[in-house]
Length: 117
Image 1 (cartoon, helix red, strand yellow):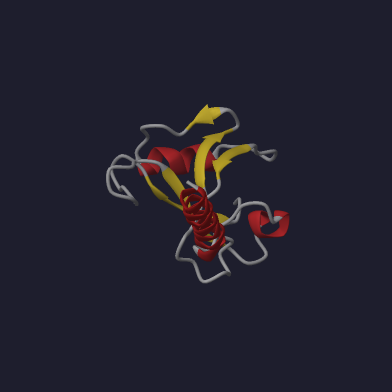
Image 2 (tube, helix red, strand yellow; image 1 turned 45 degrees about the horizontal axis):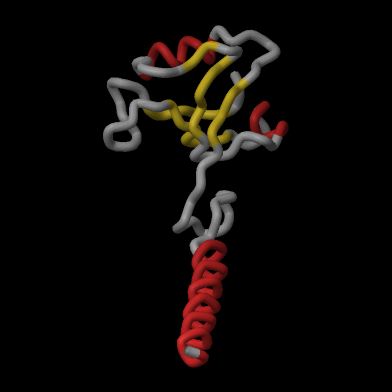
């Protein structure tokens, strides 16, 4: 096998109102683990150029089983705001801290501008 499990599909939605296929688990010492690029939570958009849109779970599994030796995956990386750091997600602080700093700078500039008027 390819060394990972999937969830999702039109008949087993992993995320409400989303029938996409996601990586649920990467098996230790499997092909995906040894390659190192695929991460748990990644959305798989296509296998060997075949899009996984609107497929039942079992049909997606069959695509992976019949993918052959050289497999090309098109994925969408997960962005995670509540992850514990191990899963490769983006911590919320990485967005909030620069955003708050910019907001504070904008308020300071506005107050300085008003004082000059």
